[in-house]
Length: 301
Length: 264
Figure 1: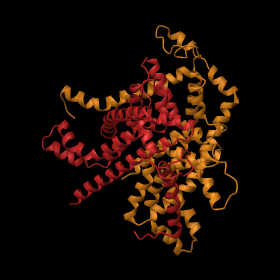
Figure 2: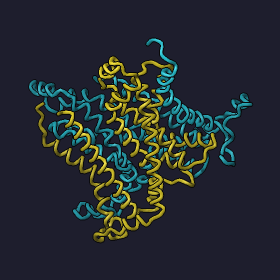
Figure 3: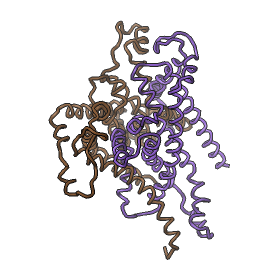
Figure 4: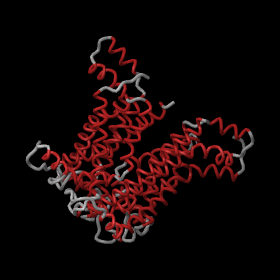
């Protein structure tokens, strides 16, 4: 690149500068404010916390920071329990998603080529309809007098109404239902590219199908398994809507705790501290996700 | 490739798709239920659709949602396309790592964190909560999705077409508008539609940033659902599902047509 007129250089410079600035202002700065507020005292005022920045008093700013909110998080075991239960629910859901999603993705990858794009579209279509509505649909199904009970009683399989709504089981059903496309699509992407001759070779050499599945299909599908699992696990940990509508009052989840700290207790500093805690739990999975994603992008031809 | 569907494959596909579609289908069927009880069938009726359209608060929320979605999706498409260009065409610019991080982070971060942090920011800069705060929040979230969609198209893009235009003397801006933009247009449209649905669908971030002046449809639906199941919400949901289905069918037909045109 040789000398360019100043105006043109300015124009090309704007391309990265505009989105950069936008994200800086609306993503990075807000995040730093959360960090600051999590370290400040609650105040009975509007807004309900002490001033954020006072440029005239930098020393006061730093001495004003305190870790009371975080101490509270460690003292009250509610937050520890909520954190552990979020991670547990997200982990179990991810395993269930793998169990449900793998056969579907496998079936899609084995389908004749002309049907495959239709099948992909059919997996994506529910994703385009409102998340809230899809969860809401399950309320009517899982209610004690709901459609599932009616159907099973009609078939004579059960005699008493099922009481699934407002239990953890309902949360698993909701998460598996809502996140299924996130699991199926990455799995399908890796399974579809798989070389079938490897399976044929294994069969010729006398390997039983389950063995070729474990020693060939699963390792080859690993990138999809990891990507799909992270794509489901990370948002599931911070989930709010599903435990709130399907989980009842006993299902503890950290995202829901943040919501109630904010909306019910109006303790903004504590809500901020919970946000930081949630983020700390997720930093490792998010870094892994970014790494997997970067490698996937580089591997693309 | 010679592939066969085994009985196991077919069964898992059938059960899988039944699981995905039955709940939505039941919701649609029960929106035509004459009974006020959401789970008891009382005959066919369209009364809940009438009730829905007479429900001033729901209609107003729908209008606010649509305006926010159109505005934020437009902004997000412009910003996301610029970000995608920056990531694919600018090599190493200062702070690139931070920029990439900021593009990916909002997509994986739990919505409660994004919602809370944006709200605290708007309070700190003293911006009243309402229409604009939701729009800005949605623009920030959805521009990242647009970036990823457009970026994947730009990476499979044949650079020689641009180089040919430049060799023939087209200035960079002209090259962009008459060569690059038409070629990446499908991904820009896809990104816009994705941003639109994400914005119309969002409950959590909108809840944090909504004010007295602006309530979106998901917030309204959510508050009604918490009070119990309502046939009106079934009707509203069915209309939303119908719009999305028509949109997806239209998009599929459009892309098929353009693919066929390309083949000729």
